Image 1 (cartoon, rainbow, N blue to C red):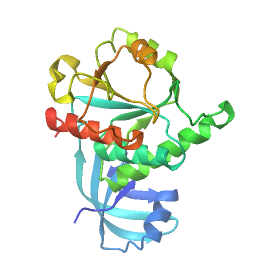
Image 2: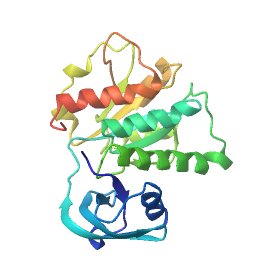
Image 3: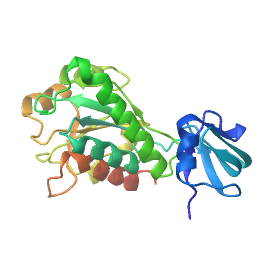
Image 4: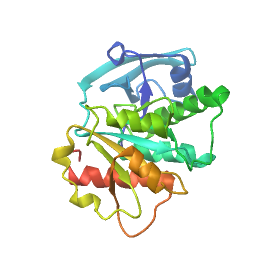
Length: 239
């Protein structure tokens, strides 16, 4: 059985404080139990609890390890879904192994984030990414970026370091994801997922990304990234 994960500033120190200590206390972790401390940036520590209360946890570190990120790295550009599907999309992207998540306000995105509420929504996505990483036993917590518009995303993808590294999932694509030359994409891949209403031809042209399809079915926006990440994992050295 895998060990429960708790976020620690310095896993090697063998201590937890604040919200993570309270979480361990609520979960009724007891002295003598083994847990995993991680910093969200690849460092983990298997540890045995020696003292615990709501204010802090102290452990003996049994094993310290550095976990590298898989390659190629995949960042998901996710069109913002409506309501609870937003958290589901983040949850599934983290489970699928995304290294980063970029909220995208596409032309057909229904859920709009007013400027005065963007920070709150991004915080929700980041909290979900952390919770999902802990649940999935990931050493790395995906970074959730600030939201981008289509124009901002297109400009970013046109930068020399990002050109020819983007795939966009599209139901009308003629190329299957299994036929992609991932070696030519390099070590960083951008996986773009459109909204429930799809990506229009003008928007697709503006992005300049390579359209690919996963299969004959049309997936929901909340689950498409997960399916795409699984396909990339199986088709590359990520898995």
